[in-house]
Length: 387
Image 1 (cartoon, rainbow, N blue to C red):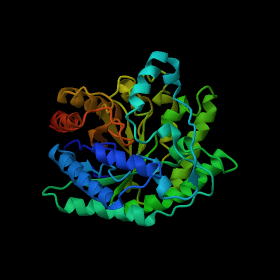
Image 2: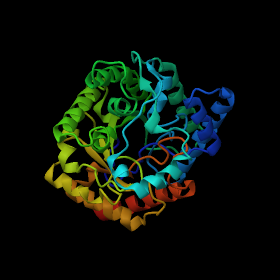
Image 3: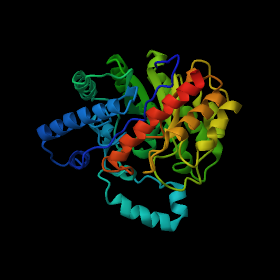
Image 4: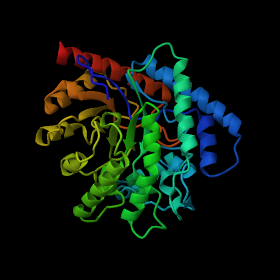
C-alpha cells in the first residue's frame, strides 16, 4: 500500500452504484436466466469507465473498478467455482429480528433487490476454482478502462471475498464440517487472490464475517465459538495469501452494510487482537456509522501491529446524509491520535455503496458528493496533521 509522507490518502471499500439496467441483467444472470452476453459486456464496460472517471473527479487516490462486472461482492463466485447449486437459508441478523417494525420496513426495501444475499446458492459438491479466465478478464478490462483516463490513481485495488463470508452465506451441504468447507474455499480463492496481485493490483479481502457473523451465524452461541471461527478464517486467509507481497494485501472488516439498529454488534475490543493475526499491510474498519464511531479508542488499548496501516471508515455508506469535510477531518484526526502516527492512516468508507446489485441505500449523486467530502476532509486533516 502507498504511504504518503505528508498527506492522508483516500480510498473506499469497493462496490459502487450500477445502472438499473445493469443491476437487473446481473440479477438475471445470478439466477441462471438467459441474458444477452454481448449487451451485458457493453454495459459493464460503459459502467466501469463511468465509475473510474467519477472516482478520479472526486479526488480518490486509491481506486478500483467498482465491482461493476459482479452481481454482488461474493455470490459471483458461483460463476468461477464448481460445487454451488440450490439455495441457502441464511440466518437473519439478530438485531433485525428483535425489532418487528423495522423488519416490516425491510420487506419493502427487499423488493428492490436483484440478488438476495440471504438466499444465495449453497455448496452441494466439491468447491474448485475454474474462473481463472474470468478474473484475468476483469483485471485486463479494468486496465483498459484506465488507459482512457487523463489522470490516474496513486494505486489500484480489486476486491475478493474472504472464505469466511462465502462459508457463512453460501451454506455448506457437502463438506464434513464448517472448517473443512472454509479450508476448501481458501484453496479455491488462492487462485483469485494471486491473479489479482499478479495483475498489479492491491488485493482487498472483504471479510464482514469477522464481525457480522457474531450476530448472524453465531447469534446466541458462546463468544468462544465465534472467536474460534475468526481464527479459522484468518488462518485460512494467511495460507491463501502466503507468498504474496504483504504490502499488496489489505483486509476489510465490518458489521454488515445495512442501515439497521446494530444493537447486537460485537465490540471491536473483543475481536481486534484476533484480526491483527492477518498477514496484511492494512485493515479497513467501519468507524463513521453511529454504532462504531467511538471505536477509534480501541487502538489506544490495542496498538496497531508494526507495519500495519489503518484505513479508517470516515464516510457512512448507508445514509444519504453527506458528511461535512470538517466531520471527516475530525474522524481522521481522532484515529491518527489513537494510532499515534498519522503516516499510518488512510481515509475510506465504512463499506461499499452497492454490495449487491440493486441494493444501494445511498442515491448515486450523493455517493459522489460523499467522495468529494472524503477528499476535502482528508485534505483538511492533512494540513492539520502534517502542517
